[in-house]
Image (cartoon, rainbow, N blue to C red; front, side, top):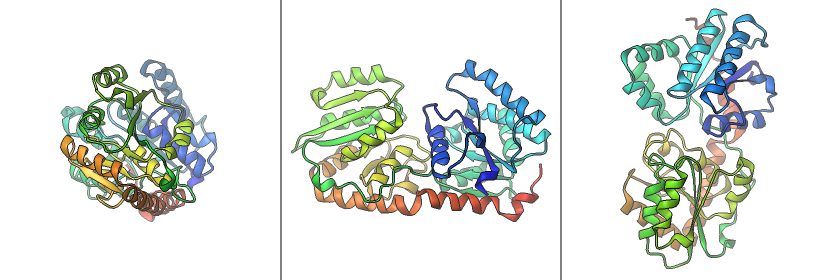
Amino acid sequence: MIDRICHIGPALNVQGGISSVLVSYKKLFNLSDEHFLSSYNGSFLKSLPRLFFVCLKLLFGSHKRFEFYQIHTSSYGSFFRKFLISLCLRCRRQKYTVHVHGSQFKKFCSKSPKLVRYFIRNYFNCASAVICITPDMKEFLITFLKNEKLLFFIVPNPCQTISSMPVDLETHELPVKIVFSGRFGKRKGVYDLINAFNQAQFQVPVELHLFGDGEIEQVKEEVAKSHKAQSIYVSNWLPHKEYLKRLPSFDFLVLPSYAETFGMSLVEAMGYGLPVIATFADGIPFVVENQKNGFLNKPGDVDALIRTIEILAHDKSLRVQMGKNAWEDALKKFKGNIILSLLNNIYTEPLLAMKKC
């Protein structure tokens, strides 16, 4: 069934969460380029001709017709592009599902003007089904949309990094290496992490490695003020393959986000058998089980972040045990064949074929 679905989203080479999911789909499900239509290439202005071309393709049938179109949707610009695409599909009486991504989507729905909220509800209510990454997002949309006839499904993001065995953390030598991967800014909690690292009382050598984009100069300035600056390394995004190659060399990952729909960097680390430290924000508790495969703290609680970083930095046996638990959970919940099965179950749902706008 998966080969009869066309995925609409950003270009596969664009840096970001949706693109990484689509790349995973292509690799894990052995899909060809024709199974993907890109409406965005990383730049708003440069994407306008691409969006126009996609709409023409869908309206006038120059694109191979699929049984379903799975529209990968986030907030703000992503939503408006996908809403326009949905209108084109409706003109051709093509069925589509909405796959919701992005940590800002709740805020976008709740804070948008009345007219935009009307467009959001119209977009979802004309879909054959809604795919959510976590139960948290599903519950929010059920309340927001107030449509009892709409079908909802939970499909986590697949993980490419699940190794045949968890990395052997027991063999890792000092210094203990902590990694952060995400957009630099307050929302991902990178400043809280730098602050916590500065205040932590380490009994062993510890390094902090930060990978990302966004407020990179501000992050470098914050690091420069630290008395531990020589142990903090700041880097731009690495090519994804290179980052994944380096990931097993770290001891644990920290992502102290204030808002996070899923947290793909958490799952990638768990797939290698690394324990993680994160927060109770949004959908993260669906991924991380507190005190089993990592630690969860309240967003913004720097004292708790200091404490959990110190615990993992000092206790290798705990890192090893939590890392094994993380790998086992990733294997059970996020492996490609599990996600494929969930998607196949959605598109063979009898009510889905009957749904019309």
